Image (tube, rainbow, N blue to C red; front, side):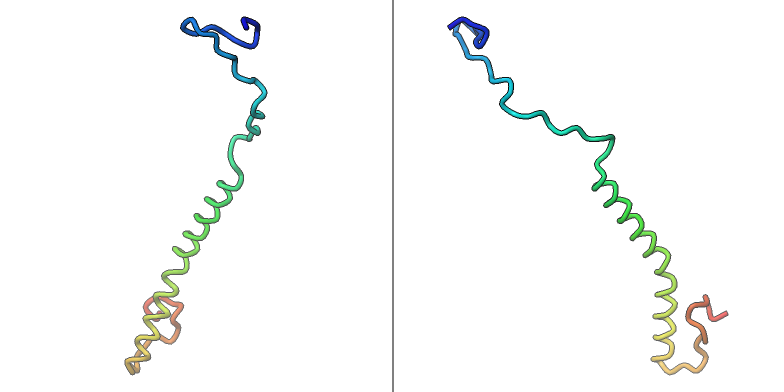
Amino acid sequence: MTGASSFRRFGVIVPAPYVGAMPPPPKRGLFDAIGVLTLVGLVLLALAGWWLFPYLQRSLAFQDCVATGRPNCATDPAKPNGR
């Protein structure tokens, strides 16, 4: 048993590993498209929240002003400070 399918390690003949046991992993490009798309979606979601937050805050402040019964609330909640 000293053929090409075995080798000697520390005086013991050990069979060589099977070369074609597992297929090679699939080749990928420079990046994983699903991961990049997910990251882009999360960044866009964060930017949309950053853009919408002041409008929502002014709208809630207007609703709070009306709910307290004040007569001098801003007429347009989309404008900052009622101007």
